[in-house]
Length: 339
Image 1 (cartoon, rainbow, N blue to C red):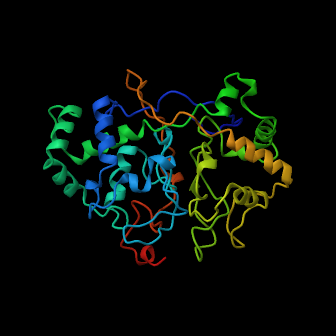
Image 2: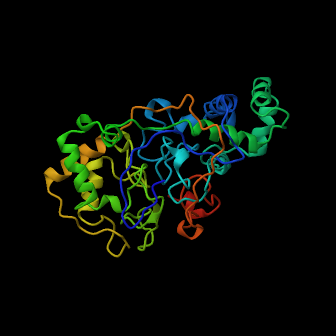
Image 3: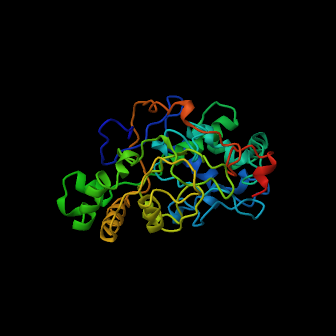
């Protein structure tokens, strides 16, 4: 879904995310994954859970400009949201893993996030009668392993969706669903503002990686880093923008792109000044507001037959993440800790 072509287009979103052949969703598996997601049993000091940084009441975001570490210090990147994550073709801002199942262990292994060895997580779960029963229901006859933990949590995360927005209703024929300002913004989005070059398809992302004229952090190499195109669905419900959370509202993001970037001189970027007037920026904001969804949880409707995940982005597209301050980073690198 959403792969850029010679003529990228915008599309409505509906239905359920695809799942890998080895992990079809079931109600018992989803329930188990939800229990694990909200349980602090998966952190080293048992004081945080997945939901600590992905809060249900905040659309599965944390409400902060950047992630907050287990050691009570700020990480270098913002916490990604989870809505529609089941349609993503890679995880994290640098795309270092390709599936939700593979992603689950990364926050645990990072000593600044969950700080728990996956083997220890399994030992805790095996000693808990509540989870022994849930695993027996979800994976009958199978020994509890971290692979099953990952399958359960990934199954729950695929129920977290966002669609039935004003935009979706408009694209499905409800002419009055979008305001005149939002319609003008959609036209600008596809023409003068050039947003559609990277933000296209039903998820408003090309699933690719680009230089966006934003530094990793102060003092980073001038060439910068390529980052995955973020989906624009529910973008006005976010608490910060860009991979490092440096921009605190959507107007700052528009100003950044309008002037062709806001990073130090010499940083490589794939953008150029746009020359947008203030009223045009207002219309773009109105269009982005139309992408706020009404449906935020699937309670059923997963396909009966197994579907395969879309082909992942080429391995060469994803940049190295060795100094990110985010899950799966090279946490023993001194520069990782010295931010």
